[in-house]
Image 1 (cartoon, helix red, strand yellow):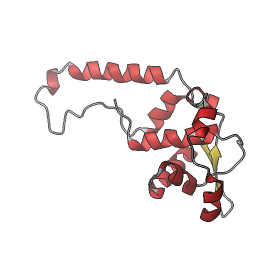
Image 2 (image 1 turned 135 degrees about the horizontal axis):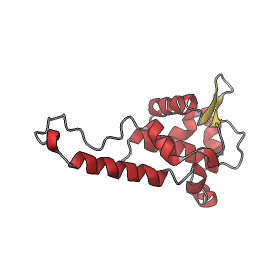
Image 3 (image 1 turned 45 degrees about the vertical axis):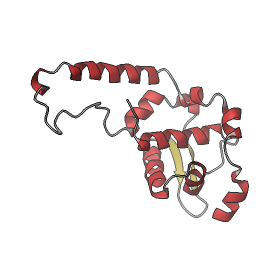
Image 4 (image 1 turned 120 degrees about the horizontal axis):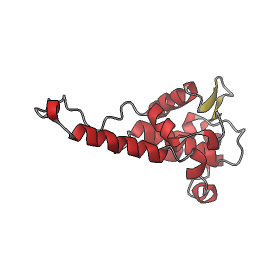
Amino acid sequence: MQLTRYTDFGVRTLMYLAVQPDRTTLFRIAEITQVFDLSPNHVSKIVHHLGKMGYLETIRGKMGGFRLGKPASEINLGQLVRVLENSLAPIDCSKPYCRFTPACKLKGVLAQAVEAYLNVLDQYTLMDIVSNSDELLALLPDMSISMLQLD
């Protein structure tokens, strides 16, 4: 099973925020887009969605930005994927219509596989996947100079 880019970028954004040493700092979309080379429009939609779902605290205005809305230890990966993914259906038997659909057992097998996939993700939090934050931070560019240019 492959996650959509939307979910991938949402998880990356949360990981980025979770590894930051100062949890009170507000971040901007421009920083995420620059660090991960993503479309500002795409990141804006993701940040808005994550804010609506409580994963981010968003503050509007000139001095606004966003930060984690709850501790990384309280962000369950399985639930996050369920929230971000538009559909977890592994196949679409209707496009084009498959003649086997009425009697197909593959759908059930794939549904079990998706359930198992989500059950594994349910065992982990955002904190679990950023427990090596020092290593992750070392892989990020120094944004202190870049962010001065973005403001």
